Length: 168
Image 1 (spheres, helix red, strand yellow):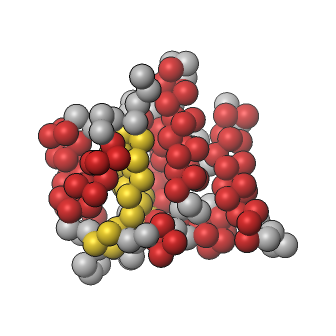
Image 2 (spheres, helix red, strand yellow):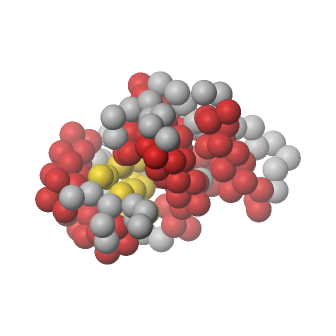
Image 3 (tube, one colour):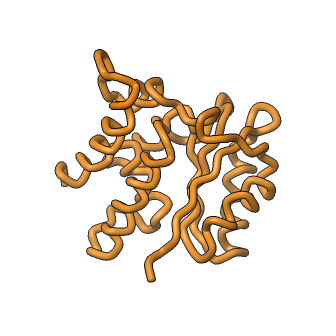
């Protein structure tokens, strides 16, 4: 049986206290035996973007080819299309200006843990439609979108994720 993956979307009540959110996510992960990654949702095209990055991270773990020490960080690398953690954090990491958060949970009962994680972090749940960054996320990721139809945006994000394997 494979590792379950869930994506949840939330909004902080004001300017996020990044260190506190990350500490709470780490504590939640330890308490529930899951790995958690928090991302600025403005840099995420869609849930499929994150699911694809998660699938690539899981495959890298199976092949013993991860660049990082955790699935959560590996997901960050794939989702951002960057090979360096520092660069990936600069593109997708939480900041005091983050308005919407994408949370990815890896592990047992991940689907049920997403809403519980949002509550533990004090985030108000959002729908993917209200949270994901769409075309603006692709631009933030450095993916040209000029001339792309709205239905092509998800494909461009998935291509960005897959390109990281090609560049290894």
